[in-house]
Length: 138
Image (tube, rainbow, N blue to C red; front, side, top):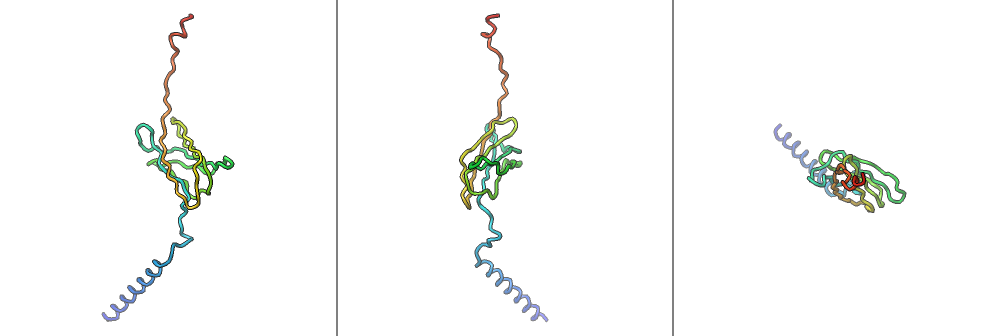
């Protein structure tokens, strides 16, 4: 009985090893191939360098200035556009209270990966007071 069990166990091990070896010799499965033509990066605060959440990032195809897709940054400031068509893009980064940043001529080639980190600066809300010279004629 022990011999049959040992023989069965060895047969299973060899069968698994043969299947694994067959899969290792194959190239990547085209159906499971991950697309690499994408743009990603991190959006940070320009002053304190902390990641910014909920920044709207929009990709426009430059040939016709057509909006392709918009995404928002996550908690860590990460954004990603997967599967963009090859071409030249304009990326616009927007968040309330921050200056808009536009990056022109981002070229995406087939099977390409573009990393683009951005710093956004806050809009300063200074109160403008008239100078004393404006009241000199009163």
